[in-house]
Length: 249
Image (cartoon, rainbow, N blue to C red; front, top):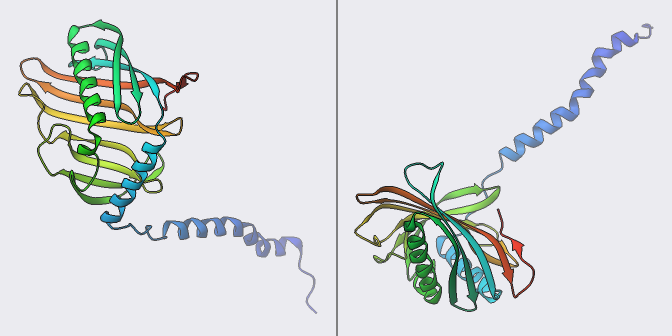
């Protein structure tokens, strides 16, 4: 009979077993990476679900006051030419009023902020004219894409008419909630002869159970004056008179 094998002789036969967890892990990763992309609903279905999500969100609207900071930059993005802080009061379903709390630096900054806030109030009053709906936009699906770790449908927006309140660009729509997380593009119509190469970007987030626009960046080339950028960020919200809460990052 053959003699009993020594532990040294058995070792090489046993060692591969220690690799099995690693191999299993590699197999799982490979299988996950090989999974097909999740099916994408037709654009018409995405738009219908966005309409439903928007209606549900509006039903959750409550009175609030948001404190918002604005910074205006010229050619130098490391130094603001002016800073403005405003309070914007919203009363459901479609009323917005603003108050300028502080303003420093070039007077152009406050003038631009007032124009922006007046436009925001107008859009709030006439939201149906600017909603992401079939009446306002033709929409094309581009691809699925993550936005800060959230799976989104990236859609191209093609305005159906020339309107400075409509955006020709793209939106990132949460593939689960069907709420817009991010949008960027250019106005379908320039708001002024003085403004060229206008680019707009918006960010959205959850505040007290409501889905709201929480940040923006507008870049424009002003004739004669040159390029300028206005950056806004919501700082704090007071909802229904409750204690202030920080805006989402």
